[in-house]
Length: 106
Ligand SMILES: [Ca+2]
Image 1 (cartoon, rainbow, N blue to C red):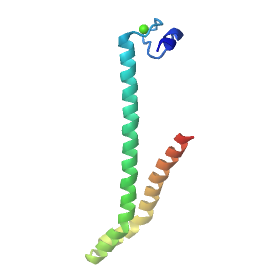
Image 2: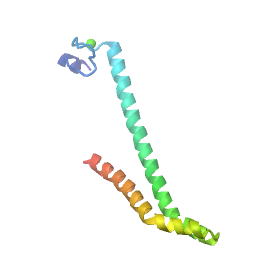
Image 3: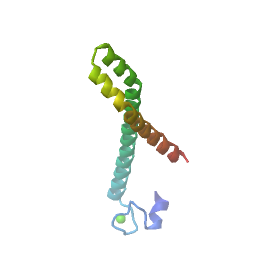
Image 4: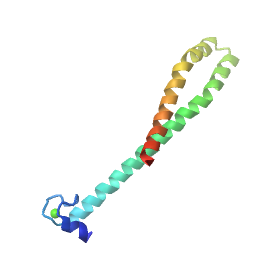
């Protein structure tokens, strides 16, 4: 870190005295670590949400079939009415997820 200390405006130098002290370094590393953890957690959440949405999409026809087998005419009808909205919403979530993934890679 000696090179970065000479620059004087190193982000870890919180009190701006041109030196990165032990505490500042530790604070900086802690901050960086938290940042990475947050990003990691966010990626996990997005991935889980996408899988959940996709799972729902795949199970949707089965729900309709189950409803019709169980004689739940009202449920079957509701599921059928909801389908277009639901599929568009899920497609939006999945597209947004893979879109941001693709953008980050560039
Ligand atoms: Ca300092």
